[in-house]
Image (tube, rainbow, N blue to C red; front, side):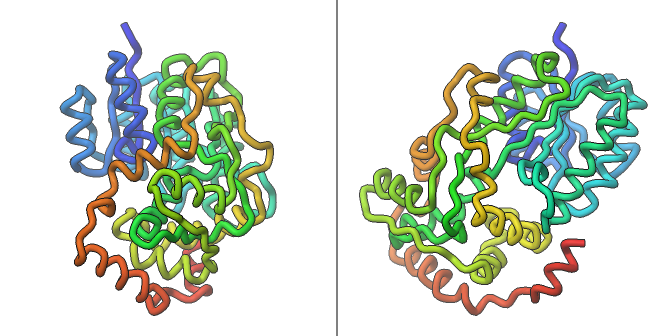
Amino acid sequence: MKEQLLVTSATGKTGFVATLHLLNDGYPVRILVRSRNARATELEKRGAELIIGSLTNYNDLSNALRGVRRVYYCHPFIPNLLANTALFIRVAEEQGVEVVVNMGQWLAEFDNQKSNHTNQIKETYKLYEQAGLKVIQFIPGYFADNILFVVEFAIRFGLMIAPLGKGRNPAVSTEDLGLCIAALLKNPEPYIGKRLHPTGPTSMSGSQMAQVFSHVLGRKVRYVDMPLWMFVKGAAKSGKEFGVDMFTISQARHYFTEYQANKFDVGGPTSVVKDLTGKEPDDFETIVRRWVAHSPYTRYDFFGWLSSFLKFMTIPFQPVPSVRELERLNQ
């Protein structure tokens, strides 16, 4: 019989895709989610065992980990990652978990990071090393889906506006990340103790990404470099649409500084996706075509266009916390 698996943050980007693949392959999958939302319900209908609870609660973790030998642990984008991960490790040891696929972060490979979230991820690596758990550190760079916010203005106005500077990124798709996680849960042994850095096939600049949008949309799309202060305002204005809160924004402003310093392109593309899944990673055009196919902005109507125009014009006037207040969230 196939072993019982647990996927945390199963309604998130990577957890949802990984769970779908595991269920399709006949694995018994338990998911720990914060609420019975549409995605959780879909996974439950497909056969997942649903447990509603919190990664920050000892009893919820104990219930979720009971009888489980392999876990995908993905801490949500909330504060106190270090303390919460320490609690997870404690409960995992108590419940006899054998293998953890841990969602780490590429930037945690570098010193002198300004993001407290990143520095706490780096500290968790030490906690895992001290524990008796077999761990695979899964450390993707900047997800392609994190650039999804550009789609509306690219389609409506031919502008790809983002604070990428001269940085390049071998953007990796959420679909490939989920596939890799599922593969690791199914066959973890060859990768225990390793840090795996999955990427897309090609490093691209913002201008090159805009050229891909031009090709897919059949119209000229121009890259416009966005100042970080404008990004903070835009993220605050559209945060609800993308599930982004001010804590996430307080970290993302540091991530974009590292992006502009080309940290996400250090080492270039890797073969991790192909090694784990047997398929070539999605290229950026495949990713963009997927975005456009599911985007509501491709259906033209005047009031929709006007709504986008007003959003664009009012971004500079969006009230946001000061830099000092954002840094308080980064403690």
